[in-house]
Structure formats: C-alpha cells, structure tokens
Length: 295
Ligand code: SF4
Image 1 (cartoon, rainbow, N blue to C red):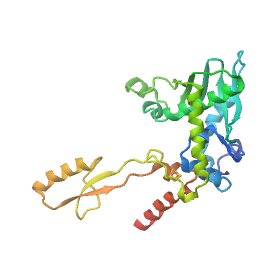
Image 2 (cartoon, rainbow, N blue to C red):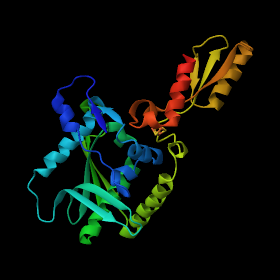
Image 3 (cartoon, rainbow, N blue to C red):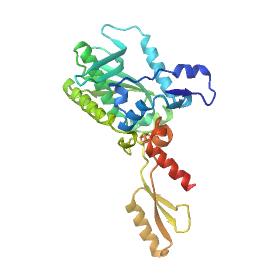
C-alpha cells in the first residue's frame, strides 16, 4: 500500500502509519476474513497500487497507539498481550491474527469507534466473529477455550451532554461489550466455511467478484421525491414508494397532473468515501461515470 501525505501533515504521522502490508498465498488475517468478498480480493490483488492518505488513516493510528500502550503494562500470570498467532488448516490455508489481550478466562479486543456503533450495534456481528477467530487461534496454541469475549470500545466522539440527556447514548467514553464465543467446533466450522468461500473467490476475475451488499456499501436506501413536474427540487422526500403514492394521491385532488414521484437512488457511502479499493471496482467506476454524464 502506498501512503501519501497530500495535506502536508507532519511527516512523523506518515512514518507512524507506514507499515509493510504484505500478503502471502493461502494466508489470511482475521481482519481480512471479515471484509466483504470483493474487498478482500481487490485488496490482495492490488495491494501495490492502493493509495491511502495519512488523513484517511489517522483514526487507525489512534487505535495502534492504544495497542502500543497495552504492550507496555506489567502483565499478571497467564496474561498475554499483542500475541501474534497463526494456525494452518489441513486445506493448506493459514489463519493469522494479533490478539490484543487474553488470559485463562477472557479474550479481549480494544477498539476506537464512534458512539453510534454502540447505539445501533452495527459492528456487533463482526466483533463477535473476530473474537471467535482469535479465541480459536489461542485455543490452538495452548488447548484452552475461552468462551468469554470482550470488546473494549473507546468512543472517540463521546459527548458528556448527550450522555446526560439521551436515553440510548453510552454513559461513559469506554464500554465493555461481552460476547459468548460458543464452542471451538462451531468456530472451526465457521472459519473453514470462510476459507471454502475464499477458494472460490480466488478463481474469479475482478469483475466477476460478487458485489458488496447494500449494507456493506453503507447504502442510504432509495428515496421517493414528490415534485412539480417541471421542477427539479422536491417538495417532500419519502422513504417508501407507498408513502409517496399516498401523498401524490392527496395532491391529485387539488392539483391534478401537476405533481409526480421521482425515485432517487440511495448513495453508496462506503464506495464513494471510504473504500480503499474503489479504483479497482467496476461498480464504483460505473457510479462515477454515471455522475459525470449527469453533470
Ligand atoms: S467500491 Fe463499493 S462495491 Fe466496490 S469494493 Fe468498494 S465497497 Fe465494495
């Protein structure tokens, strides 16, 4: 990966972020297995061409700093931090991961995230899978299964006023989210199913890779605008076609034929703002071309 510093931030930040992103055949990290199918493959295939700016990676640096601090605490007996683990399955594929912290009971991962991630539990499924795979690697190392996983979420945008006034807002800037990690057998089954999928994806060309789902693309959902036939601006935007149709039917009583419904396609926020492999993705290229044509 090429790290740029387009906004001339102190070069120390760039140096702190720069890491060797190397991929080896049949070796996948826990985090990469959690990426959408298309993203995993495009990242590996285009690693040498992917450009990311320091400004896009600043929060990742914040996370790394937390891990760095952890490495420098005095450990209790049977505690491990920042343990680099890997395990090769009979199919020849290796799972690798760095485990933030584990002892005989818990396996933990520290995350910096935004408050809405906790409010909407938007990453919980991913977090659980990450902890399960980490627990599996630790189990393969020492034969002990840790059923209890914890995400220690540090909220970088936590707001004291919201915590005092909004019911669902996290009360503190740090929250421990607990997960039951199931059994090693269940987790092994999940990992092997993921590798089976990887084997299929490796045979596909870039353009044949399955498209990321609307959720994975952070799609905002289609909207339905009620507008005067010769106007561009909408008088009201509805979330569903049914609501828009109801509104139009009411308008028809007084202004027959003057208004219409216009479908406005949802934006793919990840594709447009956060996807590091977008330049290599046909779907993104199509959106950009369409936008250019409409200008
Ligand atoms: S640009 Fe969008 S669809 Fe393409 S890989 Fe990125 S997130 Fe997925």
